[in-house]
Amino acid sequence: MSLPSVKQLPEITIEEQSEYFIRGGFRGVRVDVLHTANAVFAEVQ
Image (cartoon, one colour):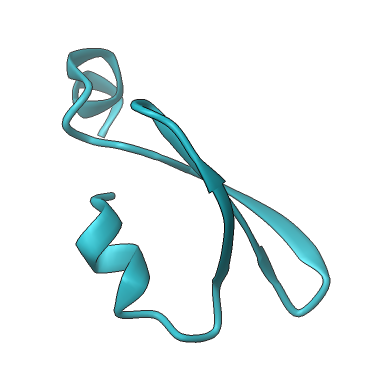
């Protein structure tokens, strides 16, 4: 998932981000988002 896509989801609060991950929260639950721009994560997609 891309950062602009995550930012379109107001329910997810972004706590930190790196080149490969976005860590956030959704109603008290931690959410880890993998950037599909990374070739490894795109392959899993």
